[in-house]
Image 1 (spheres, rainbow, N blue to C red):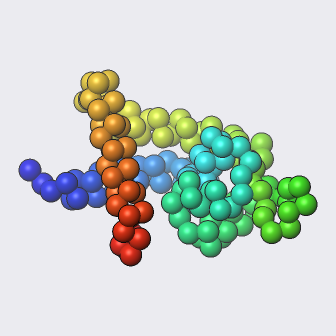
Image 2 (image 1 turned 60 degrees about the vertical axis):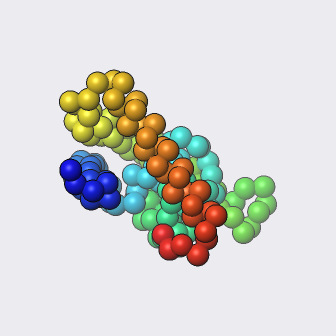
Image 3 (image 1 turned 45 degrees about the vertical axis):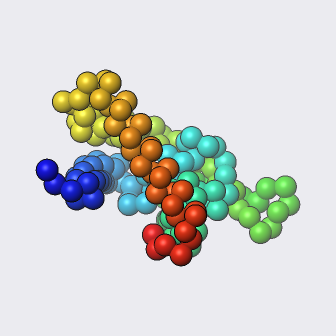
Length: 147
């Protein structure tokens, strides 16, 4: 059997290619799906929250948000007089795109797990969550570890 890291890498790569192919058909670029999903789930949030949720650098989020704002997917505004933080929310166009994304994610997940039983899918989700938590805990206890 192939190593865990190789299987995870191959699976992630194929899954990502499928998702990116589908999202490009609705005019989205890489990085935008994560942000749209975050905003659909969390509502209006600041850039720092988006970066943490999507696990990307705040500067990267800034450039993604600029393109999304230009495309009419999001709007940014100050909240409660706080000039230092801009809060981001979906526009109607962004909400429509995010809902299309849910369908795309669902279809790719369904294709990826078509030979799994519902119990196996639940086990896979549980194990991947546990794997993530383990890696996150290790990073927090050993902050010098490179991501």
